[in-house]
Length: 314
Image (cartoon, rainbow, N blue to C red; front, top):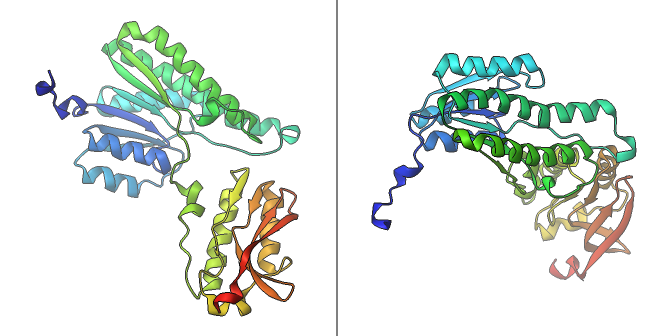
């Protein structure tokens, strides 16, 4: 039997795939992967930043059409399906990737934020899947892939509607699968973990030697982006200076230096705990490799000094 195995079993040539939120991040990766497997794409986006994704798909020799829509609007969901059928005549695959997240403490969470997250993360998934499933049942086949999250299994913090919506996505995936299997339509969900995207840019941070100003500017911008959507952000070691050991006397921070004040501001503004990596820090007349723990109120609650002193290396 193994002699009969062929990679063509995985080919998607001749298939048409809808991907929502397919012009950035994971959605863009799904689009390119489907194109590489041979599928033609119908990509639904909230904005019109399409050029990069179009170029990557066309480089694979596949067709791609973009459709701008607000998937929280039920009529635009239906229009999305109608437009795909108009362009391609069928729908073989649906990837429900579009979603959002808004963070706030549970006791302060606003109804409008709850409704906004649930509308795109859950309602649009249900409505688009329902409309597409009708097409797939008529065709006699189809695949629907829902993008859930690790928070489909965990509680999280400061993201009650995101957690609720991802639990619900796991639930409706099972509900659709139970009813549609008899029609040769399969529904599954993927629950991604921590993925290299713009949200994890801090982990990809390039530290420039002898260029503290550039490091601080880039690091604080990345920190603010990450703090807006996470409970905890950890900056890398020596993120302000790099290992420019001979310049640390001039470039060392203090607990109340402008850089540390800005880190504290970001923590307070986004209610995010921050471990300010380690930075060269001057206190007690010596320079230490110091990590500062900043709570979500923007207060430095702990300083940790490495045992060795940078002065030993000067």
